[in-house]
Amino acid sequence: MESTILRIEDFSAYFGENQVLKDINLSTSKNLVTALMGPSGCGKTTLIRCVNRMHELIPGARVSGKMYLTNEDVYGMKPIVLRRKIGMVFQKPNPFPTMSIYDNVIAGYKLNGIKLSRDDADTIVEQSLKSAALWNEVKDSLHRKGTFLSGGQQQRLCIARAIAMKPEILLLDEPTSALDPKSTAHIEELIVELKKTQTMLLVTHNIAQAARVSDYTAFLYLGELIEFGPTEKLFTVPKDKRTEEYLTGKFG
Image: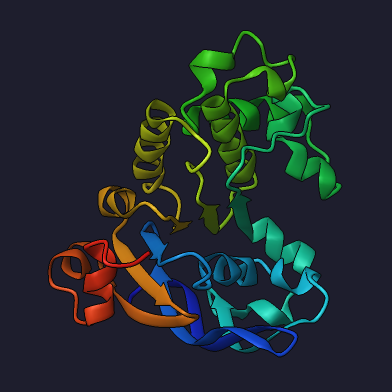
């Protein structure tokens, strides 16, 4: 792919003796959404946690193989530098409970000890909340706690917080699984809109969601990458029988 931003080569991950990812090869280009699909326990979340090196925080965890972020070796970088370049949004919305909406958005700067002038902070907060389609709903209550928002709004606040740091990649780990259908639709619209400026890896259990928002889909099963390609092609003419069986609901 031209403009490849993330390249994963012969990558395996372990918890102690248990191998959870087996020789994964995968790459993605700028401004694309790549969905990672597969049944529970297939290694989807482990894979994205390896991309921002959260996997190694677990005792006994180790990896082998290579991973590059725009040609820089992910495992040769300082984790704190890497995590500035790779944003992460989790399953459950997790705004910092003691912080205002405003402070939540710029929390990454504070945590990294990056000083912002008031004007810069105001601009970043406004731009990030607009990008996360939340500005109009919260612009008059920026100094209230983030936790007073609804679940869907909290998740959009977490997306605003992640994109405020201008990451090269945004990792989304089942970002709508704790949300109602209306909030889910909001987040899906947001993912499609964000693609203009962001590259995203999306872990989802929701096959229809992957079909709606992703450009490429990777199907993982028992720690192996079974199939990877343009979403439309993979959904209509899967090459592997296991992909077809998963998509038609034979297992999952």
